[in-house]
Image (cartoon, rainbow, N blue to C red; front, side, top):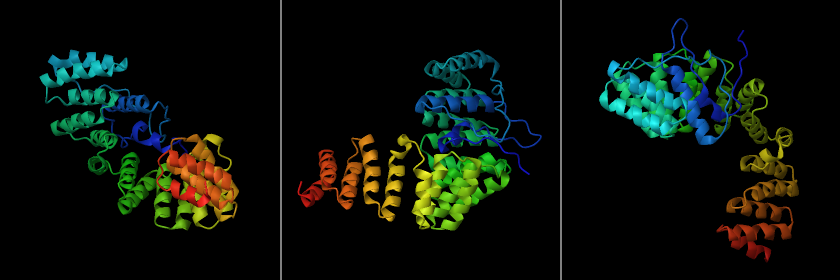
Length: 353
């Protein structure tokens, strides 16, 4: 059967920390290790989080980029030393000079792209990857890197193009199929996303994200039973991941079993229960069970944790009105009105506040 591998704890882990698996007998591209390292550093700097890499393949390859032309090698090495120190701006300047001298050197373009990633300039990084691809060779791993930069720059359609090219170059690479499927799902192209995610799951049945996103798509299509089957696979692989817990709870609520959904949500820690999607789901489940006071308390906790959110304040007011707690309803409606919620004054008038 298939060996169990570690999986990332959140969806955010996947796109930028997973090193794609090479085909059997094929050596990974020499520049792939530094590229993935630069992607990780860029995202860490941007989000301030430490992400665990997805398992399922060999460790990142500590290889050098393609050898630059002799006249520019010193500039490239200098730029890489600056990147190792985290001095992205200086590295970018040095490697930009190298690129101006040797515009048709693919290794220089890739190194400059890495520096742009470290500086969180994803659009510029993508531009350099495009130039590297135009120089050639157009390896699948380079198409994949260009797709990740395009995705980070918000260029979803271009990302889909590059991930598709990567998949065509290496159709047995589960990483490429998964990343393409996730990006298609983000673009709302659910039929294509579903087919691609199924391909990824067939290539590597231990991909929790493939099963989790298939469950999410099934739920969007109102196929609750299939959603529950898929999310059970995802939770079996990552039992503590909140994403899959939420999808399962949503499916159970849709299936008419709010009590079981609450059993998944109530054990979450207080900070997680205050997150608006979680709080709303908890409130909806309590509402289905006729527990309007508990529903209102769930929304109020989220609202107080986000005191500048006028929509949450209004939702808390409406929930307390349904629960018959006029004083709390007026309190939250006044706060919603102060925050500029346009519906709050009408609710206040109705409450006589």
